[in-house]
Amino acid sequence: MVAARCEPEQAQPLQSLFRSLCGERRLMPAVEIAAKPRALPVDFARTALVIIDMQRDFLEPGGFGAVLGNDVSLLVKAVAPCRRILEGARAASLLVIHTREGHRPDLSDAPPAKVQRGPVEKRIGADGPMGRILIRGEAGHGIVPALAPLLGEPVLDKPGKGAFYQTDLDLILRNRGIETLLVCGVTTEVCVHTTVREANDRGYRCLVLGDACASYFPEFHEVGLRMIAAQGGIFGWVSTTGEVLTALARTMKAA
Ligand code: TIU
Image 1: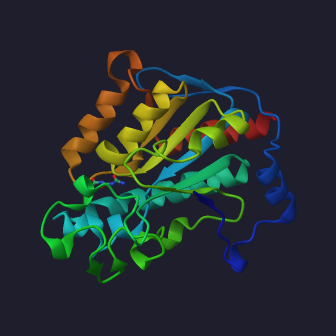
Image 2: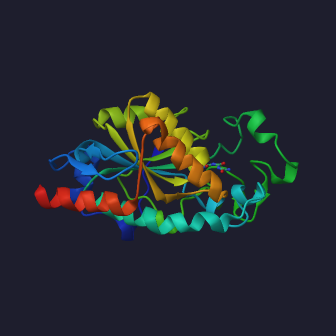
């Protein structure tokens, strides 16, 4: 499901919004982004930023991440790099897509096998301090304010870990001629990894911004990134927010 959300104070200038909605982009020459296992040539006009699940339910106390027994403060360090790449992508008029993991209030799209884990009072759909856990429309389901979507930026509600499963992400990307995904968000080894694997099988080049991802398990974060770039880049490429912003700046200057 796709929804556009816009706070009035965040409204983009009309011209930029029109470009974004129509998929009309500035022509940009290809540029190389330093990455592991090797530099990746990128045409930013055919590149989208995909921000995975930067929701209060994962990043703040009382949400889904916390009820699973995790220290949610470990994820907060991804917010500032996500914000930097989000601002860079907006300035360059890249397609920006936000995802949210969560379910319908009646849980009709939540597999019982996913819900029926742990004590009843801590399951998906149970009441928590930020509303019902991992339920669409509840406070905890929302994206953290620093990364709030703008009008024209698709917000994808996904019932699973991967952003392609039971969503129209592939359709949106193909309609815009997207070939490369810049991927960031949480958590590295769960929803980021699942999405990158799904994207890789669908023919997208995925460049993961390691510093803009985070995990409740720092060792899983490190190994998760290594797994992507291993074997000559078996699932994709791993880089940093700084390298991508440098490449974006070079491209904008040359355009
Ligand atoms: N638990 C955990 O690490 N992650 C999730 O349940 N979802 C996402 O990664 N978004």
